[in-house]
Image (cartoon, rainbow, N blue to C red; front, side, top):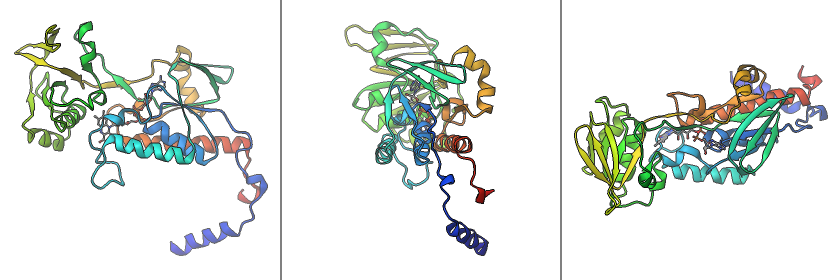
Length: 324
Ligand SMILES: Cc1cc2nc3c(=O)[nH]c(=O)nc-3n(C[C@H](O)[C@H](O)[C@H](O)COP(=O)(O)OP(=O)(O)OC[C@H]3O[C@@H](n4cnc5c(N)ncnc54)[C@H](O)[C@@H]3O)c2cc1C
């Protein structure tokens, strides 16, 4: 095995580099939507092929990961790493490589005449290949949220990163709910987790950690039925089927669904053919159902970039004689 790989390396290094092998004479127009882990990785790998994509982001680099309290399943960080710190490393890497992010929110994608046209809030873009890396959006909360309460109800934890010494109610029973609880309790807040059922869906280690923290209370079989606001204290009053809770903030962690609102009917109808022909890619959480994890998103982003390079390399640069 060792001998074989040595031989291969020797063959490669002895080969003359043909000018015909030089890649990427006609740079294709590639557009990535979403600068979370999936979109960033696609952009990094394309840049390594000298294929500079346009990378659009509506909000901030790093995506959903900015909510993660401690990422412990991403290789390379033996003690785990908080999501925001991992994002800071991603940002450092894209700066060094020269990947640029354009801040614009995509509102519509259509495909006509072999080209995508992408409407965004600030500009219109055209591309021959598109990578959708837009992740997920929160599932709608079935209870009406009064307008006055709007500024105290969230679906992500990062807006509360500077909140200390407050009462916070979290709705949900999955990884995100318990991760949020650990995050907020670690900042000196008092947290109540409400589960409308009795089953817990989070990792056992998150449950064990939450159970060990006195400032986290867990209540099962408790469903919010109405939300009111106290005009004097500015508190939220949550009327449930078995109690009434007074809280500063309400954080919803009741699940997420794919963020694909911007796809036109025409693109949806042609999606399979566009994917098959290597023009359209979905990477990361946006199409991963229950399997929403950073390492998976990163792997898929990398794979999409490699697939694009295979196609673009073939179109613009026929393989060299020597390689046939
Ligand atoms: C509390 C919490 C803890 C987590 N902990 C872990 C963990 O420990 N380990 C782990 O592996 N994973 C963890 N995750 C999951 C991880 O964050 C995701 O799997 C990962 O971020 C998915 O990356 P993505 O790029 O596919 O999507 P996202 O990170 O969601 O990125 C999508 C990006 O697209 C942008 N976007 C969306 N729509 C548009 C539009 N119309 N125009 C322009 N841009 C748009 C968004 O703003 C966002 O930046 C956690 C998630 C949460 C919420």
